[in-house]
Image 1 (spheres, rainbow, N blue to C red):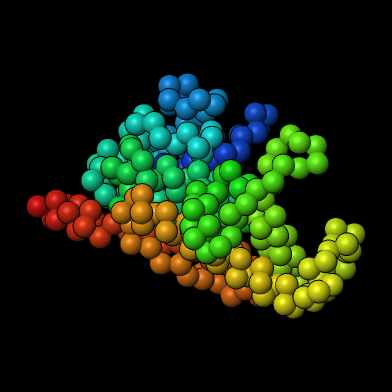
Image 2: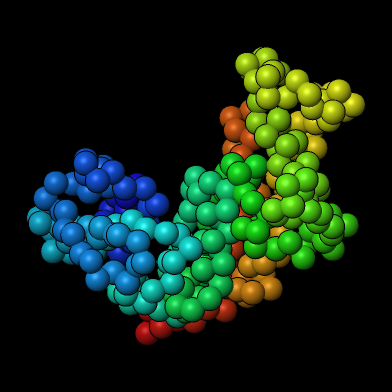
Length: 264
């Protein structure tokens, strides 16, 4: 919604949200006059589509909000408000998609129908430690670095475990806490061999590098499967948040083609 307002309501937007409170409409995303329940969105989960067409300004572009499972964001019905963007004219923006939700999103960007629409993407992931190995989009990339090559059956014999993946998650989790706040989480890390061997500062440094490795793997996936040119950067200082990495992706050829068509 913020992007829609910042662009003066002149650019059609589809806001996709995983959350829904059945007892109270989100007044920021869905103004009272704009609420419209629609069960034909093509989503497997129950969805609410809210479209604001601009009561006082006929020039306003449509704004649509959908609620459902990010992994199923691949229905052509979802993209009906953005038909004019087909051919690479759509920009995908994600923020605070915890853990594997980021992987579900970028994999959706690389397959039809979204792959026919999206020409650029700005993805700001977070909560890397919540990502499960089976959710991560590019385990082969980690294996190429010598990581996550072996799995073993746990003591209960019910599932496979990956010690490398667990270690990556643990050091990322520790690196989220400053030295002053770590004491509040002492009970969670008091048996950590990593902290005893490496110390807090070194563990945090490795945690930041582990985040970067996961993002480089995601960037590699976008390049290989989506044809994107991708840059991994920082959108704020790590003193603000440890989750300060962003993926900037573009399909230069598609964007040039769309721009040329718009000019014609």
